[in-house]
Length: 238
Image (cartoon, rainbow, N blue to C red; front, top):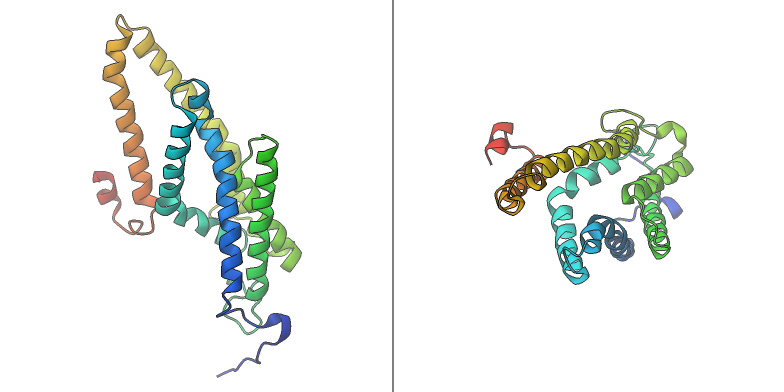
């Protein structure tokens, strides 16, 4: 069996050192604060602006939604960011589990990417500019990967890689806009153009809520770590 030389100096492993976990947790809280101030404002801005809900209620519901989303569906996104930009097990890159592993650099790099994304979001939110949290953290991870081990270690694959992530940034606003147009037209002609719009709304709104709930429930069943391995038929039934 081949034995590895002991690590020393800057390459010494950080196992058992709690400080980096504490610092990462604090910066993660700052990141969550910035996400609440930017992404949650994007989500609830139209409802608050229209007077459909108060700012206090929007903050409370947004906080609950952020927590449930991170708990139930954050596993898949975090896995994509961890593996999609650059695979830690790649022998010529981070080489996780090998004698020449660069995982200490990886730990500091991920902390640096988190700091960069958090401070960027706080600054840009202070200026009142809506931005994407995903763009910020993916850009931070890409930057630290290039600075640490070079451009050649980036994963440009379309499935589970940067190619797919970047493509989703183009497709998602177009698809969201198309769905928004279809939903508006359906609501306009089915509800507002009806002989009795109020009565039609009482009938239509619960159906729309039920449809949205069913889609979100299915996504949770597909993406949640606890239910991801269940048969697809079981997920559809539930």
